[in-house]
Image (cartoon, rainbow over all chains, first blue to last red; front, side):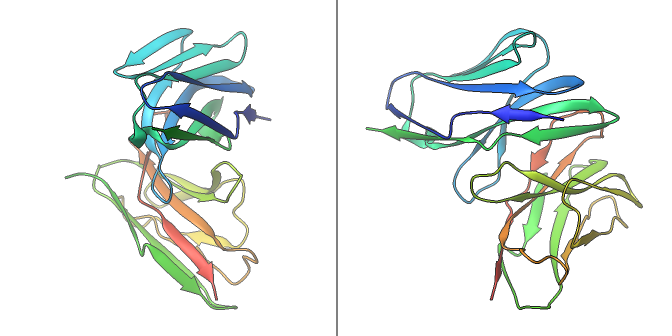
Length: 111
Length: 113
């Protein structure tokens, strides 16, 4: 089976840096996605990691360690609009490329 | 502009009633998915379709049905057999079912009267 853990809630200050962790246990790992979801809206794709290391995309970076079953999403120069939920999703290579989602981390950015 | 549309944004269901949620995409994607989102839980897969005229049950298919008669459309029916239908329903699509990124529609919030 698959299991994904991420913190329920985090708070940070505008302009700061925040790291959102995700740990997973899965068979047939075949990639990890991060999505951003504002309240009542659709998740939007942020990043994808399938190999170990850091992927940087503007203010957002995502890191993966397959041996540790661990990923993090790093948000720099936080803005108020970054207040949202961040969803970690793992793709399992079990014939059908299923995505298993964590419960999401709600980030609140304060002035 | 290419994208995924879902309608309606809000839907109210009476006891014993079937309701259908619409999902349309003009991205020319082969694969489409339906998820359910409840507070405090991750997205859960209801049904998915890898190609036209084919679909498979996901993790929580009981009380739901789908069809895939056209590549662009993947409607979800919430039947009266679904005893706890109140949730946020999200449709997604991807180029194919080889693990490509899934892109989501704006969602439909279903409430029971």
